[in-house]
Length: 265
Image (cartoon, rainbow, N blue to C red; front, side):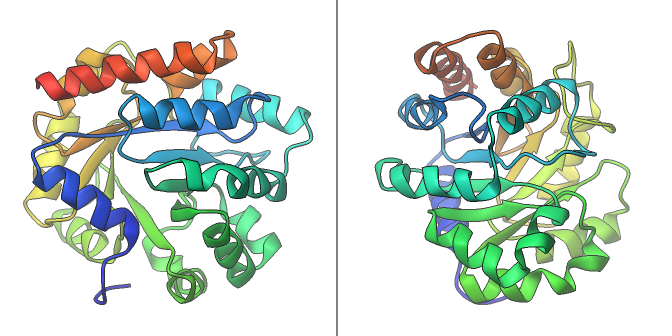
């Protein structure tokens, strides 16, 4: 979808970016622990600019072993999309940054696109990422999202042509999610040079916030990638700490370290 007024997510991220801030979007798998909503609050207080919330699915084709483990742990606790949205409705008013849901189209299809979009917005979600729906197959989802005011964030691949990136940047809402590395999500020792190359290509064709994810595992990674991009998404590195028993405060301390690295960039 193109045109029309900007939604809350893009307005918020643009304002922070245009004020000179590098953007930080940490991730948490919904209901990964009983204290997961405390983790949301703590990450917001630690300097997150938005928070990505994963809605677990049993066949997560884009997720690496850490996020898969987090999703399995959540599912074993009886987690459903409805329980995650109910938790969010209870705390969304206390979190002063936008929430972005990440899930797969099977979840959306089962609920019904219009129902899923409306219930997501009612739970305080501003945007959604559905990585298994390519650009050419958005027609079933986009009208429902637009009717509810939900922003659809699209992923940009490092192997896409310049022409495809231009179309994707026109269609995405909220921000452009640049994929640093081919393959699934996960922690990496290095994210290589292609992250910066993709960020430059995206910045050349859009003024929307360009935020890079996949493999961002340390404050040094975040600082290096943000030299070319507007910010970073950090997922597996945070979830690994949570899976290993980190409290919300301890996990948020890592988010604060990422924030400090970005602020020093």
